[in-house]
Image (tube, rainbow, N blue to C red; front, side, top):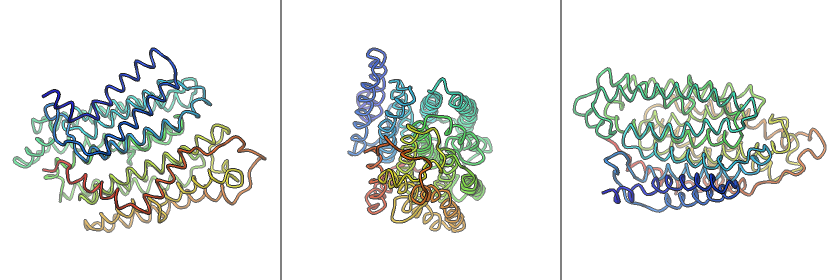
Length: 476
């Protein structure tokens, strides 16, 4: 049985063993370049495992559930991790923090995300959440001599610890109300016995923990300070893969308690309110930002609101759209942060004005940055447009057209601060002569830009993959 469990959960087993290998190699060889190479190979192998179909079912006494749903999520996490470590190397060298531990911690954070996506038990869900979170706290403060990074790490740790305690209290209350920790057994209990007030309190606390991880209003205050202070590649991982993991786990919980949440007016009203506030507050706050990292932080809050629209729709189409958008958003935002990391290697500023004249000196870099900004805005035919369309269409199909209208209007507001960056790059003169000397467009950024473009032109295959994955998600 143990061998069967290990085989069924092979990707997680592999990620765990590879993490141990990375720790041992780094501790003995102490060569960051070697650790970087092994980490990249590990991510490539994980991506390969998620592409090919595998067995489905429960492993380790129903602690883990392996399905196309978890495979799709693991693909997003592994791809995000690979892109982040690839974009990190030059940045880390310039900042003199090129430690092999950085790559190990990124891989361990990805392992935590995979546990969240495959969790069949609330205990495993919490373990995955904490594995990811603790790794991200370290990544936020890995620039130990930088006061801004220290402040970011401390804020993230204190608020993250508080949200984890709220999350764990919710788990305890749900267990007290149902007597079960296994997710599908909780769903069966609720079908047979209904939900008590204790269960609803527990679910509310659990939801609050998830909302903190996705930076939804009113649990978003930590986001701009942490993203600004953290190393830019670390901020890219926090804003993309970690949010995707939280959304995937949140959807898993909702599906298993769907007998109580579907067609529940109070539940839908609460989530709809959070989605609206998240879209509106995120976009309005981003309008006032000069610092690009803070602007992307507030915009990431808005994008969490867009994905919440798919969750509120409470349909396979909505959940599938949220899965697809998690992939698209990860590519767009990692690409944008990657450009910022390149410019930071030669300039201290990260304001929009610091990108003035980029097109004249580095047209390829300006082109990929413009593509990311336009896709984040939702301009067709890029992938961001397709993702938003599917999310809002799911809301319309679920009879929540008003929510889709709010999303469209909020997305229109975002055009101002995204296109402002494009205007500076293409329509302003450089502030100083040869200010971008030495900046070279990373091949990784070109690949990301190509993926964003192709997923917009040919989205059918990936959308079908996400929709098919939802059919295998637990639903009771």
